[in-house]
Length: 342
Ligand SMILES: NC(=O)c1ccc[n+]([C@@H]2O[C@H](COP(=O)([O-])OP(=O)(O)OC[C@H]3O[C@@H](n4cnc5c(N)ncnc54)[C@H](O)[C@@H]3O)[C@@H](O)[C@H]2O)c1
Ligand SMILES: O=C(O)C[C@H](O)C(=O)O
Image (cartoon, rainbow, N blue to C red):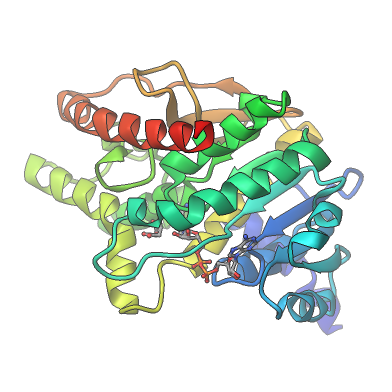
């Protein structure tokens, strides 16, 4: 009786949070998580195990605990088959046949660090994972969580180009946490359920490159004074740092990121399955601005991103935010591109 009551919990959780979550069992996918034993990787894998669109879950990490994480999750009474893979020699088997690869592998920030300070360690991790994906699952949709996202997506893209398997619609930076936070903060301001809030967050995923388009929020944000709009914008831009400080050396956001990564992956899977009108913000190759990668709402389809929906009309303040973001974004992108060309 318990299981009959509890099995629909996953469905309800996604329905409420991710809107329009589909439970159709007829089409299912292999999802690989790289960095599956980490602070994000474990709860993300748990949420993916609960997703009815996932038939196979491959958990990859360099940490020795990885087979144990897989054994643990495999006991959850959901149909997805879970296998653990540990160390680079097992990476090809983890990747082979994957429809989607989600990457939270790499080091997180400590207080006082910027996301760019993670570049030196995380760049080679993402480069090496991308190289293996290029060989063993070149059609996989790659969802990059690892920071600095602004540079990691160009790195993975350059690796795919080198291998002759580049498809910009399949290499995506996960900026969903910025949207999730915006909805949460605005829900509190308006006194409404955050899940009923819809807002595009454009640009990139660090400080000034995070641009919440409060003027396009639905329903409208209940703030009249420009000073309060600016304070809310700043809070969204600095929300990651808020968590890093609160964790006091224990890392950065993991649980809210796991939820955001699961939402994003669910949307990618719904697109692969053929659902119409699945829209999320994603950071990807772009010609909308002078930055060659940019985040904004996109529509998913059977081959990753089916349509870039742009970002609509900005007000004067948002134009100013965009102008402040572009130099930083271009610098982050150039650093990623140069890393692979070295
Ligand atoms: N995009 C976002 O919004 C967002 C949000 C939060 C965190 N992050 C980023 O996600 C990353 C992971 O954060 P975390 O808190 O989970 O860190 P963590 O240290 O808890 O976990 C990282 C995991 O990656 C594994 N790993 C390291 N090198 C690897 C490799 N070569 N191959 C496979 N796995 C490897 C580690 O063993 C570890 O299990 C960080 O870079 C962090 O900044 C991004
Ligand atoms: O802030 C970080 O370093 C992690 C992540 O990018 C976040 O926004 O929480």
